[in-house]
Length: 377
Image (cartoon, rainbow, N blue to C red; front, side):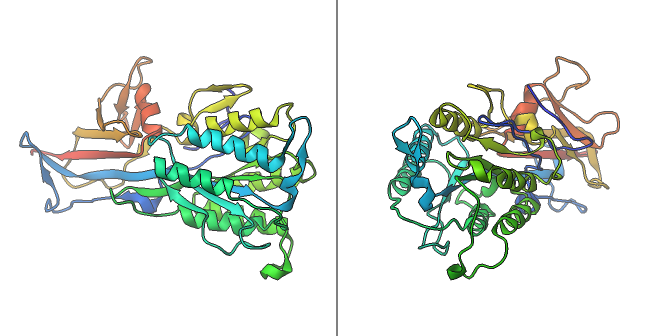
Protein backbone atom coordinates (compact mmCIF):
# COMPACT_ATOMS: atom_id res chain seq x y z
CA UNK A 1 0.00 0.00 0.00
CA UNK A 2 1.47 3.34 -1.03
CA UNK A 3 0.83 5.88 1.69
CA UNK A 4 2.44 8.95 3.12
CA UNK A 5 1.36 10.17 6.54
CA UNK A 6 2.15 13.79 7.46
CA UNK A 7 3.17 13.64 11.15
CA UNK A 8 1.94 14.29 13.72
CA UNK A 9 -1.62 13.97 12.45
CA UNK A 10 -4.76 11.91 12.81
CA UNK A 11 -5.13 12.36 9.07
CA UNK A 12 -3.95 10.28 6.19
CA UNK A 13 -4.02 9.45 2.55
CA UNK A 14 -6.53 8.00 0.13
CA UNK A 15 -5.19 6.55 -3.11
CA UNK A 16 -7.68 6.48 -5.97
CA UNK A 17 -7.77 4.59 -9.20
CA UNK A 18 -7.19 6.58 -12.35
CA UNK A 19 -4.52 8.70 -10.79
CA UNK A 20 -2.79 9.29 -7.49
CA UNK A 21 -4.73 10.81 -4.69
CA UNK A 22 -4.80 11.60 -1.06
CA UNK A 23 -6.30 13.80 1.53
CA UNK A 24 -6.56 14.21 5.25
CA UNK A 25 -9.43 15.08 7.52
CA UNK A 26 -11.09 14.42 10.83
CA UNK A 27 -14.12 12.26 10.24
CA UNK A 28 -16.67 13.54 12.75
CA UNK A 29 -17.09 17.34 12.84
CA UNK A 30 -18.27 19.13 15.95
CA UNK A 31 -21.75 19.56 14.50
CA UNK A 32 -22.32 15.80 14.70
CA UNK A 33 -20.83 15.19 18.14
CA UNK A 34 -22.40 15.14 21.57
CA UNK A 35 -20.25 15.56 24.64
CA UNK A 36 -22.05 14.86 27.94
CA UNK A 37 -20.15 16.01 31.02
CA UNK A 38 -22.02 14.77 34.06
CA UNK A 39 -20.53 16.77 36.93
CA UNK A 40 -23.41 16.18 39.34
CA UNK A 41 -24.46 12.66 38.50
CA UNK A 42 -27.92 13.86 37.49
CA UNK A 43 -27.41 12.59 33.94
CA UNK A 44 -25.69 9.37 34.93
CA UNK A 45 -27.55 6.27 33.79
CA UNK A 46 -28.16 3.06 35.71
CA UNK A 47 -27.14 -0.14 33.92
CA UNK A 48 -28.89 -3.47 34.21
CA UNK A 49 -26.11 -4.79 36.43
CA UNK A 50 -26.58 -1.96 38.91
CA UNK A 51 -23.51 0.01 37.85
CA UNK A 52 -23.77 3.63 36.83
CA UNK A 53 -22.49 5.64 33.88
CA UNK A 54 -20.78 8.94 34.65
CA UNK A 55 -21.07 10.13 31.08
CA UNK A 56 -20.32 9.68 27.42
CA UNK A 57 -16.92 11.08 26.53
CA UNK A 58 -17.54 10.98 22.82
CA UNK A 59 -20.61 10.01 20.88
CA UNK A 60 -21.12 10.42 17.18
CA UNK A 61 -24.06 9.54 15.00
CA UNK A 62 -23.15 10.67 11.51
CA UNK A 63 -23.87 9.11 8.15
CA UNK A 64 -21.18 9.72 5.53
CA UNK A 65 -22.23 11.47 2.33
CA UNK A 66 -20.53 11.43 -1.03
CA UNK A 67 -21.66 14.47 -3.05
CA UNK A 68 -21.23 13.92 -6.78
CA UNK A 69 -20.77 17.20 -8.66
CA UNK A 70 -20.99 16.32 -12.36
CA UNK A 71 -20.17 18.43 -15.42
CA UNK A 72 -22.95 18.56 -18.04
CA UNK A 73 -21.63 21.55 -19.97
CA UNK A 74 -21.54 21.71 -23.78
CA UNK A 75 -17.99 20.35 -23.99
CA UNK A 76 -19.18 17.03 -22.53
CA UNK A 77 -20.71 16.30 -25.94
CA UNK A 78 -17.22 15.78 -27.38
CA UNK A 79 -16.48 12.28 -28.68
CA UNK A 80 -14.10 10.02 -26.76
CA UNK A 81 -11.70 8.39 -29.23
CA UNK A 82 -12.31 4.69 -29.81
CA UNK A 83 -15.49 4.48 -27.73
CA UNK A 84 -18.33 5.61 -29.99
CA UNK A 85 -19.54 7.69 -27.04
CA UNK A 86 -19.40 11.28 -25.96
CA UNK A 87 -17.68 12.22 -22.73
CA UNK A 88 -21.11 12.67 -21.15
CA UNK A 89 -22.41 9.27 -22.30
CA UNK A 90 -19.30 7.58 -20.97
CA UNK A 91 -19.57 9.39 -17.63
CA UNK A 92 -23.32 8.83 -17.30
CA UNK A 93 -23.10 5.11 -18.00
CA UNK A 94 -20.20 4.63 -15.58
CA UNK A 95 -22.10 6.47 -12.85
CA UNK A 96 -25.25 4.42 -13.48
CA UNK A 97 -23.38 1.13 -13.26
CA UNK A 98 -21.77 2.17 -9.99
CA UNK A 99 -25.04 3.49 -8.50
CA UNK A 100 -26.89 0.30 -9.46
CA UNK A 101 -24.53 -1.73 -7.28
CA UNK A 102 -24.75 0.43 -4.15
CA UNK A 103 -26.56 -0.91 -1.09
CA UNK A 104 -28.22 0.60 2.00
CA UNK A 105 -24.87 0.10 3.78
CA UNK A 106 -23.15 2.42 1.28
CA UNK A 107 -22.55 6.10 1.97
CA UNK A 108 -25.45 8.43 1.29
CA UNK A 109 -25.29 10.05 -2.15
CA UNK A 110 -26.19 13.52 -3.37
CA UNK A 111 -26.04 14.61 -7.02
CA UNK A 112 -25.51 18.05 -8.51
CA UNK A 113 -25.41 18.47 -12.28
CA UNK A 114 -24.01 21.74 -13.57
CA UNK A 115 -25.05 23.96 -15.16
CA UNK A 116 -28.63 23.31 -14.17
CA UNK A 117 -30.31 26.51 -15.31
CA UNK A 118 -29.10 27.88 -18.62
CA UNK A 119 -25.44 28.72 -18.08
CA UNK A 120 -25.84 29.09 -14.33
CA UNK A 121 -26.31 27.11 -11.14
CA UNK A 122 -29.40 28.52 -9.50
CA UNK A 123 -31.75 25.59 -9.16
CA UNK A 124 -31.96 23.30 -6.13
CA UNK A 125 -29.82 20.17 -5.86
CA UNK A 126 -30.82 17.71 -8.59
CA UNK A 127 -31.00 14.77 -6.14
CA UNK A 128 -30.60 15.78 -2.49
CA UNK A 129 -28.26 13.72 -0.33
CA UNK A 130 -30.00 10.66 1.09
CA UNK A 131 -29.10 7.12 2.18
CA UNK A 132 -29.21 4.53 -0.59
CA UNK A 133 -32.55 2.83 -1.23
CA UNK A 134 -34.38 1.61 -4.34
CA UNK A 135 -36.12 4.99 -4.44
CA UNK A 136 -32.94 7.07 -4.24
CA UNK A 137 -31.20 4.85 -6.79
CA UNK A 138 -34.13 5.39 -9.17
CA UNK A 139 -33.97 9.15 -8.59
CA UNK A 140 -30.23 9.24 -9.32
CA UNK A 141 -30.65 7.18 -12.50
CA UNK A 142 -33.53 9.34 -13.73
CA UNK A 143 -31.56 12.53 -13.11
CA UNK A 144 -28.61 11.24 -15.12
CA UNK A 145 -30.93 10.18 -17.96
CA UNK A 146 -32.67 13.56 -17.97
CA UNK A 147 -29.64 15.61 -19.06
CA UNK A 148 -30.40 17.51 -22.24
CA UNK A 149 -27.83 19.43 -24.29
CA UNK A 150 -26.79 21.99 -25.21
CA UNK A 151 -25.79 23.60 -21.94
CA UNK A 152 -23.04 26.09 -22.43
CA UNK A 153 -20.93 27.34 -19.55
CA UNK A 154 -19.22 25.54 -16.68
CA UNK A 155 -20.05 27.42 -13.41
CA UNK A 156 -18.14 24.95 -11.23
CA UNK A 157 -17.62 27.09 -8.09
CA UNK A 158 -21.36 27.60 -7.59
CA UNK A 159 -22.01 23.89 -8.11
CA UNK A 160 -19.42 22.93 -5.50
CA UNK A 161 -20.93 25.37 -3.00
CA UNK A 162 -24.40 23.98 -3.63
CA UNK A 163 -23.19 20.41 -3.09
CA UNK A 164 -21.42 21.29 0.15
CA UNK A 165 -24.55 22.91 1.54
CA UNK A 166 -26.65 19.89 0.56
CA UNK A 167 -24.46 17.38 2.40
CA UNK A 168 -24.00 19.31 5.62
CA UNK A 169 -25.91 18.76 8.80
CA UNK A 170 -29.18 17.16 7.64
CA UNK A 171 -30.80 15.13 10.40
CA UNK A 172 -32.60 11.95 9.33
CA UNK A 173 -35.71 10.55 11.01
CA UNK A 174 -33.59 7.98 12.87
CA UNK A 175 -31.41 10.74 14.35
CA UNK A 176 -28.35 10.17 12.17
CA UNK A 177 -26.72 13.34 10.89
CA UNK A 178 -25.58 13.54 7.27
CA UNK A 179 -22.08 14.91 6.90
CA UNK A 180 -19.92 15.16 3.76
CA UNK A 181 -17.09 12.68 3.61
CA UNK A 182 -16.18 13.92 0.14
CA UNK A 183 -17.21 16.37 -2.54
CA UNK A 184 -16.38 14.52 -5.76
CA UNK A 185 -16.05 16.83 -8.76
CA UNK A 186 -16.24 15.14 -12.18
CA UNK A 187 -15.39 17.63 -14.91
CA UNK A 188 -14.01 17.84 -18.43
CA UNK A 189 -12.49 21.27 -18.15
CA UNK A 190 -11.68 24.41 -16.23
CA UNK A 191 -14.54 26.49 -14.81
CA UNK A 192 -15.92 29.61 -16.37
CA UNK A 193 -18.13 32.23 -14.76
CA UNK A 194 -20.56 33.79 -17.22
CA UNK A 195 -21.37 37.46 -16.52
CA UNK A 196 -25.03 36.58 -17.08
CA UNK A 197 -24.88 34.58 -13.85
CA UNK A 198 -23.60 37.56 -11.89
CA UNK A 199 -20.08 36.13 -11.67
CA UNK A 200 -16.92 38.23 -11.61
CA UNK A 201 -13.21 37.52 -11.28
CA UNK A 202 -10.97 34.63 -12.22
CA UNK A 203 -13.04 31.40 -12.31
CA UNK A 204 -10.20 29.08 -11.30
CA UNK A 205 -9.44 31.31 -8.30
CA UNK A 206 -13.12 31.19 -7.41
CA UNK A 207 -13.10 27.40 -7.61
CA UNK A 208 -9.97 27.13 -5.46
CA UNK A 209 -11.56 29.48 -2.92
CA UNK A 210 -14.67 27.32 -2.82
CA UNK A 211 -12.60 24.14 -2.37
CA UNK A 212 -10.75 25.86 0.49
CA UNK A 213 -14.03 26.90 2.10
CA UNK A 214 -15.31 23.33 1.80
CA UNK A 215 -12.15 21.97 3.42
CA UNK A 216 -12.47 24.42 6.29
CA UNK A 217 -16.00 23.09 6.76
CA UNK A 218 -14.42 19.60 6.87
CA UNK A 219 -15.57 18.56 3.38
CA UNK A 220 -12.51 17.61 1.28
CA UNK A 221 -12.73 17.78 -2.51
CA UNK A 222 -11.67 15.04 -4.90
CA UNK A 223 -11.37 15.88 -8.61
CA UNK A 224 -11.96 13.39 -11.43
CA UNK A 225 -10.58 14.74 -14.73
CA UNK A 226 -12.93 13.37 -17.41
CA UNK A 227 -12.06 12.76 -21.06
CA UNK A 228 -11.40 16.11 -22.70
CA UNK A 229 -10.05 17.75 -19.57
CA UNK A 230 -6.40 17.54 -20.65
CA UNK A 231 -5.67 21.27 -21.08
CA UNK A 232 -7.31 22.03 -17.74
CA UNK A 233 -5.34 19.38 -15.89
CA UNK A 234 -2.90 21.78 -14.10
CA UNK A 235 -5.75 23.99 -12.92
CA UNK A 236 -7.76 21.01 -11.68
CA UNK A 237 -4.74 19.65 -9.82
CA UNK A 238 -4.46 23.03 -8.09
CA UNK A 239 -8.11 22.73 -7.03
CA UNK A 240 -7.50 19.20 -5.72
CA UNK A 241 -4.52 20.42 -3.70
CA UNK A 242 -6.55 23.27 -2.24
CA UNK A 243 -9.36 20.83 -1.47
CA UNK A 244 -6.90 18.72 0.52
CA UNK A 245 -5.33 21.70 2.29
CA UNK A 246 -1.82 21.01 1.02
CA UNK A 247 0.80 23.37 -0.39
CA UNK A 248 1.14 23.93 -4.15
CA UNK A 249 4.36 21.89 -4.24
CA UNK A 250 2.85 18.93 -2.38
CA UNK A 251 3.51 15.48 -3.79
CA UNK A 252 0.83 13.47 -5.59
CA UNK A 253 0.07 11.28 -2.58
CA UNK A 254 -1.09 14.22 -0.50
CA UNK A 255 -4.18 15.27 -2.43
CA UNK A 256 -7.06 13.70 -4.37
CA UNK A 257 -6.81 13.98 -8.16
CA UNK A 258 -8.02 11.13 -10.34
CA UNK A 259 -6.96 11.44 -13.99
CA UNK A 260 -9.35 9.54 -16.22
CA UNK A 261 -8.26 11.49 -19.30
CA UNK A 262 -4.96 9.68 -19.70
CA UNK A 263 -5.81 5.95 -19.72
CA UNK A 264 -6.46 3.60 -22.62
CA UNK A 265 -9.98 2.79 -21.39
CA UNK A 266 -11.52 5.87 -19.85
CA UNK A 267 -14.84 4.15 -19.11
CA UNK A 268 -13.23 1.25 -17.27
CA UNK A 269 -10.87 3.51 -15.36
CA UNK A 270 -13.67 5.85 -14.32
CA UNK A 271 -16.01 3.07 -13.25
CA UNK A 272 -13.33 1.24 -11.30
CA UNK A 273 -12.24 4.41 -9.56
CA UNK A 274 -15.76 5.51 -8.65
CA UNK A 275 -16.92 2.12 -7.45
CA UNK A 276 -13.87 1.48 -5.32
CA UNK A 277 -13.95 5.03 -3.95
CA UNK A 278 -17.65 4.95 -3.07
CA UNK A 279 -17.21 1.54 -1.44
CA UNK A 280 -14.44 2.92 0.77
CA UNK A 281 -11.62 1.02 -0.94
CA UNK A 282 -8.29 2.00 -2.44
CA UNK A 283 -8.00 1.37 -6.19
CA UNK A 284 -4.51 0.37 -7.25
CA UNK A 285 -4.33 0.02 -11.00
CA UNK A 286 -7.09 -2.40 -11.98
CA UNK A 287 -7.54 -3.69 -8.41
CA UNK A 288 -9.41 -2.39 -5.41
CA UNK A 289 -7.38 -3.09 -2.31
CA UNK A 290 -7.93 -2.50 1.36
CA UNK A 291 -10.25 0.17 2.63
CA UNK A 292 -9.92 3.83 3.39
CA UNK A 293 -10.03 2.95 7.11
CA UNK A 294 -6.70 4.01 8.51
CA UNK A 295 -6.41 6.47 5.65
CA UNK A 296 -9.33 8.65 6.73
CA UNK A 297 -8.43 9.23 10.32
CA UNK A 298 -6.22 7.81 13.01
CA UNK A 299 -7.48 5.07 15.30
CA UNK A 300 -7.49 7.32 18.36
CA UNK A 301 -9.98 9.42 20.30
CA UNK A 302 -8.46 12.01 22.66
CA UNK A 303 -10.22 12.25 26.01
CA UNK A 304 -11.36 15.65 27.30
CA UNK A 305 -9.38 17.24 30.08
CA UNK A 306 -10.49 17.29 32.78
CA UNK A 307 -12.50 14.09 32.53
CA UNK A 308 -15.84 13.57 34.24
CA UNK A 309 -15.83 13.78 38.04
CA UNK A 310 -15.78 10.27 39.51
CA UNK A 311 -15.12 8.72 36.07
CA UNK A 312 -13.78 5.20 36.45
CA UNK A 313 -10.98 4.59 33.94
CA UNK A 314 -11.15 0.89 34.73
CA UNK A 315 -14.83 0.71 33.79
CA UNK A 316 -15.22 1.90 30.21
CA UNK A 317 -17.61 0.66 27.53
CA UNK A 318 -16.81 1.25 23.86
CA UNK A 319 -19.50 0.60 21.25
CA UNK A 320 -19.23 1.04 17.47
CA UNK A 321 -21.73 0.65 14.63
CA UNK A 322 -20.54 0.23 11.04
CA UNK A 323 -22.91 0.50 8.10
CA UNK A 324 -25.95 -1.73 8.42
CA UNK A 325 -24.19 -4.10 10.86
CA UNK A 326 -25.44 -4.36 14.45
CA UNK A 327 -23.67 -2.32 17.11
CA UNK A 328 -20.95 -4.21 18.97
CA UNK A 329 -19.07 -3.74 22.23
CA UNK A 330 -15.33 -3.58 21.57
CA UNK A 331 -13.13 -5.49 24.04
CA UNK A 332 -10.42 -3.79 26.04
CA UNK A 333 -6.99 -5.21 25.22
CA UNK A 334 -3.29 -4.41 25.40
CA UNK A 335 -2.68 -2.77 22.01
CA UNK A 336 1.07 -3.10 22.41
CA UNK A 337 0.63 -6.74 21.40
CA UNK A 338 0.89 -7.29 17.65
CA UNK A 339 -2.10 -9.67 17.68
CA UNK A 340 -4.33 -7.41 19.80
CA UNK A 341 -7.83 -6.61 18.54
CA UNK A 342 -9.80 -4.07 20.54
CA UNK A 343 -9.07 -0.80 22.34
CA UNK A 344 -6.62 0.43 24.94
CA UNK A 345 -6.19 3.56 27.09
CA UNK A 346 -2.41 3.26 27.05
CA UNK A 347 -0.06 4.23 29.83
CA UNK A 348 -0.90 7.96 29.67
CA UNK A 349 -4.63 7.19 29.84
CA UNK A 350 -5.41 10.21 27.70
CA UNK A 351 -6.34 8.48 24.44
CA UNK A 352 -8.64 5.64 23.48
CA UNK A 353 -6.62 3.76 20.86
CA UNK A 354 -8.11 1.08 18.60
CA UNK A 355 -6.00 -1.77 17.24
CA UNK A 356 -6.38 -4.83 15.01
CA UNK A 357 -9.68 -5.33 13.21
CA UNK A 358 -11.32 -2.99 15.70
CA UNK A 359 -9.26 -0.15 14.22
CA UNK A 360 -10.74 -0.85 10.78
CA UNK A 361 -14.23 -1.14 12.27
CA UNK A 362 -13.82 2.15 14.14
CA UNK A 363 -12.52 3.93 11.06
CA UNK A 364 -15.54 2.78 9.08
CA UNK A 365 -18.01 3.39 11.89
CA UNK A 366 -21.10 5.48 11.42
CA UNK A 367 -21.63 5.86 15.13
CA UNK A 368 -19.60 5.16 18.21
CA UNK A 369 -19.64 5.92 21.92
CA UNK A 370 -17.17 5.73 24.79
CA UNK A 371 -18.94 5.59 28.14
CA UNK A 372 -17.26 5.77 31.56
CA UNK A 373 -18.63 4.15 34.66
CA UNK A 374 -18.58 5.92 38.02
CA UNK A 375 -16.06 5.17 40.73
CA UNK A 376 -17.70 3.23 43.51
CA UNK A 377 -20.86 2.79 41.51
